[in-house]
Length: 205
Image (cartoon, helix red, strand yellow):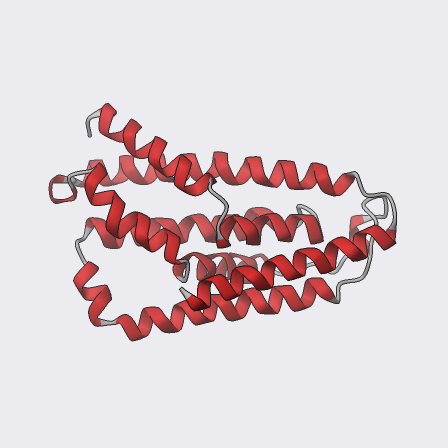
């Protein structure tokens, strides 16, 4: 594809992905509440969700998505429910200060975190609007070849890696400023509230 089109798409995606929404809120809240453990798996799920919506847009299945709106509605509510589950876990998470051993925090399975991130993106209306409403104005989707699709996916994953990685780093640094278990407990409850808010945002849009 023409590099100017790819650059325009990359800049638009950078702005869209970098603007705080349910996905970013979920990633930041998770890192603040639980540290970087599992952050990559969760963020990877969020990113692959973007690729799924991108693929649907390139294939021109917006009408198909409308036809099977019930399925996508179920996915949306599943994502919201998962965020509520994470919010509940964060609210009740043990208060472990960043100076304590990471092993003291219970580990979560990577595949569950990946699917959780995926469900968040699949139910995120902001992502749907970007790929189904804005993307056709950025790229001529009817002329996207197989190689062009690979290039767009590569740009998408690169931009999202930069955006998500930046948010993870900032949230991790903010978390390390805490020095007491009491402060961590307050942060856990605050991030749980943020996560619940993201779930409501997904479910009600």
